[in-house]
Every structure is written in C-alpha cells, then in structure tokens.
Length: 370
Image 1 (cartoon, helix red, strand yellow):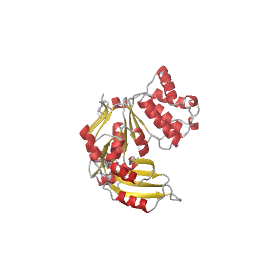
Image 2 (spheres, helix red, strand yellow):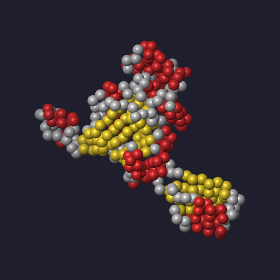
Image 3 (tube, one colour):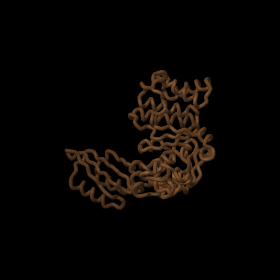
Image 4 (cartoon, one colour):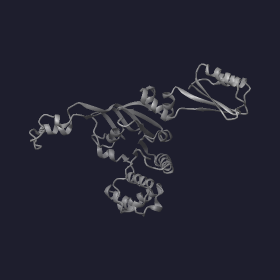
C-alpha cells in the first residue's frame, strides 16, 4: 500500500456553549438537577448546538508507508485532535480518514490492529512488577498466547536493549528505560503504524538521541514501520522526519521535507568569510561597505579580534544569490581567505516565520507534486 494514512477534507468541531444554555435543562437555585426533557439532555451531551470551535479545518494529508512524518504546531493547533481521530478516540464531523485502508469511524477494531499510539506518560504500569512482568500482563490483555507472548517479549526487550534489566522492578527504571518499556508495550501487537506524541519529552540528551536512533535504525529501517510523530522539538523533527506538516489553528499551512520547509520559508541565508593574517584598516572597511552595497546583500557584519589581525565578514544575502561576484571582489583585495561558510536557516527559524506570516508556499508546492 502506497499510503499508510490518508486524510481528506477532515473537519472537527467542538461546541463552546455551556449546557446551561440548552432549553429544557433546568439550572439555578431550586432546580435540584432535574431534567424535564430527555431530548434536551441528549442535545447537551452531544453538544450539537453552536457556536463551535473548529479544531481541524479541511485537513488533507497523505502519509506514505515506511516514512517518518512529523506534525508540528503551537499549542491548540489541532495536533492532539488529529491523533485522537486516528486512534479512534474522537470521531470527525466531516471528511474521510483511512488507516491502511480502514475507516476509524466504521472499522475501529481493524484500525487498532494497524496503529498503536505511544504517549510520553508512564501510565498503566505496575510499580511492584518487573518490566518483563508488566509486558506479560499486557500480552495477556492483548490475547497473545503464552509461547507467542514469551517470544515477542524476549524479542522486544532485546530490541530496546532492556534484556539485562527486564527482571528489575519498574520503580527502579529511569525515565529513558520507562520510555523504552512503553515502546515495548506498543509493539507487542506488532502494528505497522506507530504514533508518537512528544517521544523524547523528559529525556536527557543521551537518552533522547538513543531513542531517536532506535526509531530510525530499528523501527523504520529494520521493522519497516510507518511513524507519525507530534513534537515541539524542532531540531528533533529536522533530524528524524522525512516530511512534516505544520498545523496552525486547525489548518495545514506548510507541508514538505524539512529542507523544503526551511528553504522556502526563509528568504535569506548567511555567508561568513574568515580572513587570516590581515590587519583591519581603512581599505578593509571600504571593502565591507562595497560588499554591503551589492545587490542581493542585505547586511554586512564585521568581527575583529583584539589585535586586529584576524577578522571576518558575515553577510546576510538572498538565498539563491550567485556568490561569484562577491568572492571575486574579495580575492582582488589581496586578503588571505581562511574559510568560507554558508549557514542555512534552521527549521525553528522557518517554523517561526511560517507561524508569524502564514506562509503557504511550501504547502502549495507539495500539493502540486502530490
């Protein structure tokens, strides 16, 4: 199957009206909580009267089988609602969703056999049991036979490098080990799609990097899983994700590879040239002004060491600018160039630019290529 997840024109609304505003629901002193109209009660529970907040607004998304896809966005953007719909916890108001071809609304059981969510909170584990015993308990709940459960648990403990600590009490597990045990629990049923919500929250840098490596090297390359992850960690998304979508107020406002998002959202890049064994004086100052007046160069910053012997120029230039003219002018000055570096915008800078300006060029390009 080419696509593991397909989402078309997805809409989800949440009511904002209090139940007290519904006709037939008594409130105030003396009401004693009685209900005079059962239909009004159902209306209140369903929240079918407005006004509404649209958590998701005509979201269209296709996630390819075997890729790592990231969902980014500020708080309240709709990320959690989207994940809950995929996990059959929330039903959409409009649109279509398919998980490996199954509709979460009509076939929730089949969807849950194809998709498993891994949440950052360590919920559901018994602190008095060992890691292995906790997994045996969940294997029993999932309907795995004794031999099948043992084989699967042994494999997963080895898979996550927990074999040596498998018989230790859960209360002795570090945060990183708890997160690995969560992954083991999620993989007990061996679903082809794994959904992560903030996978490395609370982990130290070493544990976080180990967890990211495990996602790439083992879950995707070895197991062939499709990974959907929601994260606020932008460097992590840049490192892990094949593609990503940025959600803002329920809409996808950017969609593409991390490099495309960074490149299309930011208009400039930085060029830094470091000179060696050169005194900074009037001629060098003139050079800086001439470079700053060049078309496509927006700013020139000069840095000089305490002895005026080693100095550098940092220029903010248009991202597609041809550097030949700049480097030719510098070479004619007779200065000895020690290093030349260009710095591309980070995903964090692109994210801020997109959120602040509603940049949709990335989305439009991706949709055109779909």
